[in-house]
Image (tube, rainbow, N blue to C red; front, side, top):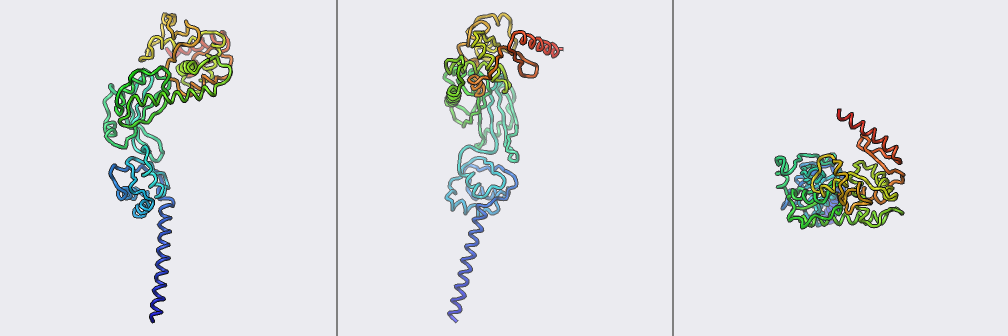
Length: 383
C-alpha cells in the first residue's frame, strides 16, 4: 500500500513539474510574443510612478494581455527600478518585453506633446504639436507669435507638463541677428548671447533643447553643426571652382540660399554665379544689396530703389567685383553643397519666371526676352 501511495505521489509530482514547466513556457511566450495592440498608442509614465501602475494603464489600453506577467517579466529582467518618466510611443503588436524596454531605456520622450520655437526670416513663432499615434505624425494644436498674439491655453498647459519636448527650428536663410533675436522668445532657455555670431556660421536645422539649457550652448551647437557641414562639403568639392577657401564657399552658398527657394534650382543658380566669377562678371544680385542696407537686422519690407542699387557698400555686387566680404545669411546644407558642386551649365543670367522658379539664359538676348516675359506677368498680376 505504501508503495502504491508513493507511486501516486511521484506521479502527481511529475505532473506538477510538467504543469509548472508548461506554465513557465506559456508565460514566457506571453511576455516575448506579439502583443494585442492593433494600433500604436502613447503611454505616459508619470514621475515617481511604479510598474504596477504602468502595467494597469497598459492593460486598460489593451497593450498587454496580463499585467502580472508584465510585472514578473520586468522583475526577472532586472528593470523594475529603471522606469523613466515621459511619454512613449508603443507600436502596434509590441510585445511585453518590447514595452518594458521602451519605458526603461530613457532618452527623450517619443510621444505626446512638443513645443517648436520657429525662427524664420519674416517672423518667429511658437507652435504646440501633439503626436497622433495612429499616423505617427504631429498635429498642430496651436501657434502664436510671442509678444503679438495672446498666449493660447494649450501652450500654458503643456509648459507645465514635465514630459513636453522642446525644439528650436531655424529656417534656411535666416541671419544671425534673426537667430539671436528669436532665441529671446525661447522661454525654456537661460542666459543670453554674448554677441551675435558671425554671419553664416549657424546651421539651419531643428535642435532639441531641454529646460535650463543656455542660449550660449545652443548657439555653440548650431556653430559646430555648420562647421561640420561646411568641412564635409569642402572636402567633397568639385575641381576647378573659383573659390579659394571654405569661407568663400559659405559666402556664395548664402547668396544661393537667398536667391531661390526651389530646391531643384540651387545647383543651376550656383552655376550662374560660378560662371560669372570665372568670367570676371559682377554677380549683380539683389539680396547682397539688401544686406548692405539692413546688415541682416530685420527685413527691408519693400523693393530696392535705383539709388540703392548704385550705392557703394561692401555687399553691393552691382558695384563691387567678386564676392562680398561676408555671408549675407545662414545657408542650409543643400545650398552649401550646391556652391561646391554646381550644375555644369553656361548660364550667366536668370530671372523669375512667374511660377516661383527662374528662367535661365546663356546670352543677354535670351535674358532680355525672359525679363520681358516676367515684366508682362508682373503687369498682368497687377491688374
